[in-house]
Length: 118
Image (cartoon, rainbow, N blue to C red; front, top):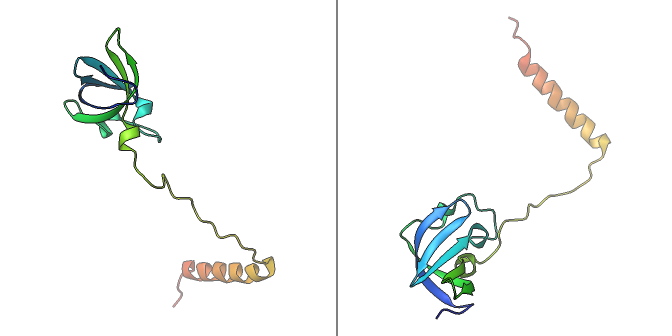
């Protein structure tokens, strides 16, 4: 008898757009697409393939129908930062200092595009 919260091993039997089906002993289980990662999951096949043996955590058990709700992400969660926070350098530069820089850049650009006269 499988209990909620247990760690189990099962074999992936089918993959559909909304989840993967897993056989765990005499139980049939479903790993919903939301239980693969905390991030957006585009393709379940990026995580598991049919025939693969996987380690999973039991979220819920239906003893009457021998069905399981399973989680992949609770076992295989990557530790650390999900993504880097962009670093912005915010600084004020006066218009008085920026105008000469802009003018010089424009003059250089124009000189490169002018036809050369011999």
